[in-house]
Length: 285
Length: 285
Image 1 (spheres, chains in turn yellow, orange):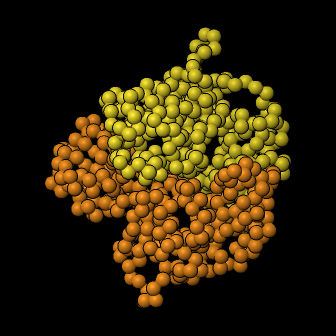
Image 2: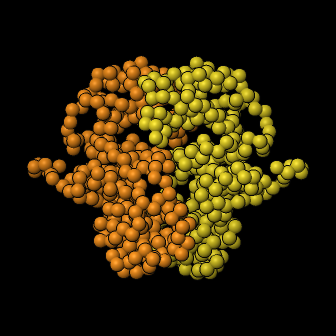
Image 3: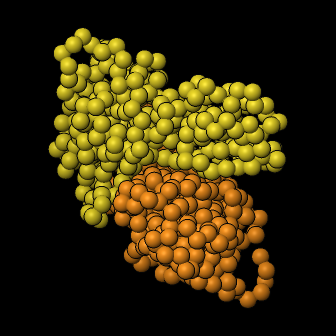
């Protein structure tokens, strides 16, 4: 890292095109001055942070409809980063076109098939519109603008309309308003956290991963480390370990900070009971 | 239900086109005589079973890369069905074209963007090939055959090549061999299970869902119902309840059958501790 004064424009890597929902998360987490580095794969995002190309990484970790992004939990285990913040982004799909295009002109709508399938009520109400699958939500906005299409629109985030100079024709056309993705902001262990606040005050979460052998009661014993100290668990999820049929990973989020003595004691207790324990990060809830 | 003799060709609903991985799961679960009813949305699959249009429903419930399909867990809670069987399908992506097309002729490859993104090593090794997003994996096979394309191929399951009379040019071009989806076979409570076997023998799993209030230790106490009876838990996952900020759903799979007394006693014990408890099904592991 450079020894210059603290950078005012942090660089962040994320997976997807500029304007993707991960880009929105990066803006929420790091402010409008963030300089983004879009990547093709999730792994590229982690490599960019490891190699110092960026100051931080932004990754989706779970979605209310689709569950946890196991691939990113795997990368969290493999790379040695810290979770320093989280944010929730509501997935709002907007109908977006070139300036000058009116809704009644629209005959074709381009977007990622997952986004199209989350707007089926809109298509049912507008049978004159043809659905056109495209690579990427934000990329479909870029395309309808670049190609100068006058009878087409895209489905994507509001931020992608801004980025590509397009216009929102209809806001929030998604079927389900409860489609929310949780993102983590990651830093390397040698980097200071962006937000330096009182770690002992309320409102912190700690995320960890551990393994226990699959003997009956092993998870019960592991949870005793928290139950006996009145620590609330707000997420728990098991995952079979690849190639080790009777061993499991558990992802766990708890309310509390690693600066609190009772959390430190609970982690020391869990360390006795678990084969492996890693604290992934401690951050504001 | 008809009073005729037991049907030899069960009808099963699933989400996707004929040849989708859910179709493969239906073949694994119900045999080659299964008559399939493809649906647009997961909800349509549940409605088809509720309304008696089909004898069974086949739904994906979790994937090793992408986690649990929360939407289907929601439908399992809302509809009153039983899980009667499970199967694991390895997601194998094949390059498929019209008969007569050779690999060196292929300039364009169509598929769902999620499938394309799971074959990035293949595209890196074959830069002469253009990636073309399409709605659906199996639908892209149907299209390249129907349109008579001579310079194009699709990425999809082996079963879709069979269905549309196409040829597999390259097998298993996916980056990650550990991409496995778990499917459930569902029946209505008034229907007998397809497989009638000894419920008391080993090798059964039971899936359930319950809620406890988020007071510290409530999950620990709930798990005591199983730990105190030496019952192994093989999946546990928490999910916040919509609109009730401090309450959680837990999905849990255990090794054992509801025909066993210790499982019955554990469920009676959990019933005392939980606000809500539903057994979703008991089926062969």
